[in-house]
Length: 333
Image (cartoon, rainbow, N blue to C red; front, side, top):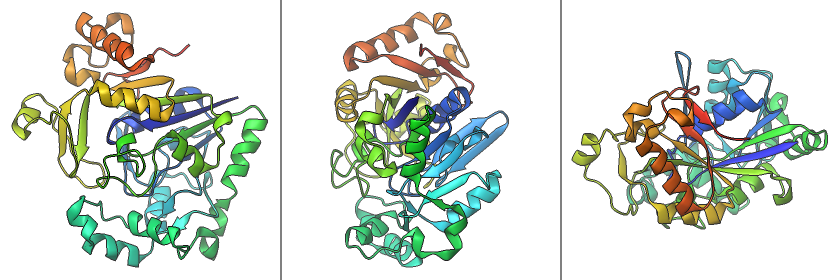
C-alpha cells in the first residue's frame, strides 16, 4: 500500500501535470484523486502526439486502469467536468464526492466583475465566490443535484477501502504552496489552503495514511498575475532566456525569476515533503533534452540538482527533461 501526495512548491505552473501523469503511468494506482480549490487551475499533459489540458479531471486519468475521483473539498463546475469526461473518453471511471460544492452562474458573474478580478487577477472561474458561499453555508452541493447521481460516491470511503486492501492511491494537488490562503503571499493567493495538509483534507485522507509527499518545483520560478516575485526578470530577459510561458487556464504571460532556494526550503517545511520532482531541466540545460538517465546529464545540470538537494535538504527523485510525460528520469528506489 502506497499513498503518494503531489503538490506544487512555488506559485503553481511547476509541471505537476507531467509528474502526475508519469506517476500514474508507472505506478498504476487504483485511485487517482484530486484536491484543491476548483477549476481555477489547469494541468497540461503531453503524452505521445497528444496534448491534454484539464481543469476539473485529475490528470492521472491517462492511466486507464485507475478510477478517477474528485474529493469533497473541491468546488465543481459541472459543465467543465462533463465536457472533459466526454472529450477524453473517461466515462464510467470518473466519480465525485457527494459533498463537492457546485459553481453556479452567479459565482461566474461575481468573479468576472468583482474587485478580485482587478486586484489579484482572479481567473474568473467562479471558484473564489463559490468557496466564499461554502464558508457561509449557502453553497449548493453535488448531492443536491439529481442529475449527478450516476457519478456520485463517498470518495473518502472509497480511498479508505483501497488503502485497507493494500492498494495504491495517488493524490493530486493544484496550484502551489505560496498561493495558499494560509501560507502564501496574501492577499495574492487562492481561496483555500493548497499545501499537502490541505489537499489531504480535501480528499479525506488523514496524515498518518500518507507515505510520500512529492513536491514539484520548476528549474526556474514563474507566477501568473499580480503578487510579489523576488528577483523578477524583465519580460525581455525572460524571453531571451527562453523562459516565456503562458498559463493553462488564463493564457496570461507568466512572470519569471531564477530558482529560489529560500522559497523552496520553506515549501519543503510547510508540506512535509520527502522528495522533489524537478521539471524543465532541459530549458536551463538544452543538452539534457529528453535524457532519461541521470548519468548522461551534463556536469552542470548534475551540479544544479545536487545544489537543490543540499539547500532544500531532500532528494530530487524525478527529473523532467522535456514536455512529454516520457521525458523523465525516475530515481526512486
